[in-house]
Length: 231
Ligand SMILES: C[S@@+](CC[C@H](N)C(=O)[O-])C[C@H]1O[C@@H](n2cnc3c(N)ncnc32)[C@H](O)[C@@H]1O
Image (cartoon, rainbow, N blue to C red; front, side, top):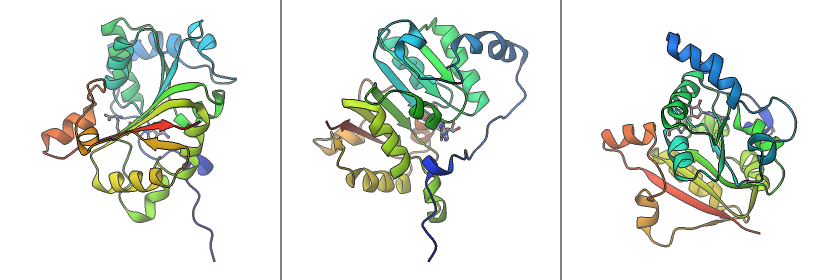
């Protein structure tokens, strides 16, 4: 019998778009001038000291899209350093525009796979990880492409501090069920919801993302999951 196909932590293959429209002149200038000053170095250990010059708390956003949530969190928590990983260049440009418009100094960007970052941070070094509206890959035969799978979750669990938080947001019913099923199987995470309202309403400190806004406009429900990394 064939083995089950490996999940993204072992296949290390990115699905989805890496670039879209041709960049406008101002956008290209941001990529040329601002991005290099914010880019996570391509090799070596990733530490808050290396990225920000001090031992501040470190958060990671996986697939930040255009960066609205990441920028909102960075603005609300200036003492925190946030790493954003996003392979889609148009998304990175969106985040650069946010950084520039809001004058943010506490964001660093990896224009690539979040797994590369999870591999290179020290165990128990992140305080929060955000995974908001991940690509749903709704067909059953593509389930192994979903970020919420044992391999990537093991890497997230390794990177989070005990007591650290993983947030998952989705508006996709298939992904919602899948994520609950995967997370319920884990012994290293505790679901923080006490009442249905906790996962049916966006927490106050959870800035809205573009995908969430789009889902709301279409009348879709959105679900907000918060998990604590157990010691
Ligand atoms: C559906 S979009 C959601 C974007 C944003 N989080 C939002 O809510 O508006 C999913 C994003 O995840 C990114 N993505 C997919 N796989 C990724 C990976 N392995 N590491 C980092 N980002 C990834 C995609 O490029 C895409 O921008």
